[in-house]
Amino acid sequence: MKKWIRYILIVFGLIVLYLSTSTKTMQKISDVRNDNDAWWGSHFPYEGDLVGMSYLYFEKSFHKPKEKRYTKADCNKDSINLVVWGDSYAQYMADSSFCVANYQYGRRYFSTLKYDIDSTKRNIMIIEITERLVREYLSNTDMFNHVVREDGKVAIDNIPSPNVQYAAIKLPDVNNLFNEHINQNLEYNLFNYNFINPIRSSKAWMNYKLFHRASGNVVIANNSDRLFLKETTQRKGLTGYATPLADKEVTDIVGALNEIDNHYKQAGFDEVYLSLIPNAVTIYQPMGYNMLIPRIQTHHALQMKCIDVYSVFKQKPDGMYWQGDTHWSNEGANRWLKLVNGTITRP
Image (cartoon, rainbow, N blue to C red; front, top):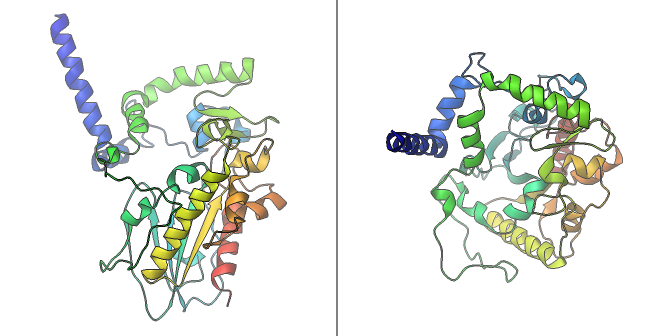
């Protein structure tokens, strides 16, 4: 009997691993389960992703409005072809929010962006990336494999910078074997079900009310008015806002950015911009900050132009981020759109 149970568990584990690895299968599963009230469904945390991760649904002060409101751009839209390679911060912005004739968007880690170059217009690329991913993603030029011209043309004479390290032997990419989000997918398929939520909510209530702690990968701000993603508050690892940051690492990131700038200008872009979106903890609880964003943006060797969100948010931080979500608020998003439109329409 034990032998059969062992075999059943092995087969079950392999099936779950396969489902969690396949991007297409996970999309089909999430389409059926997300925001479904059935016992096997999964509540989509429209109250805020951090609220959902910590099960603090009962604390209304952390909730955010469900509706995203982006201001429509009131400007000349005839002359610019804009390509944005970004993440969830810019994912749901429509082309009507930008002062552009054409708008193309691709989400990092989720898809390949095949962009078009329009020779009759100014071709502009914006690389938008949240701060917690900067040290990993911009340590190399891997985006060359995921942001490519639709017509297949590539940049020529793209000489590697001495600041960027290249392996002598190309090793197999583990990401080709497993989904980039395998851990989250496994948790979703094994544990994220509505019938388990009462247990988790009870635990979250006790942690919050008795010990003033948040459950899961979430921490409460020092002044208790908002939630932070735990990995951004840590003082170790690449995602932590206070992790020690050596000058050499900053120089290497700048070297990779110069490679990227050169590559896409040779591919047909007139301008390439970097837009680093600060972690919420960087803005609201900056004690010990390693100054990653300003050290990159003000580096003497950086050739790529920057859309400086950090300085603007620091000047007026109130309301820039939702209190129970990792993302910027409607006001923060519209502040970014104003910066972008002001930059790309500048003569």
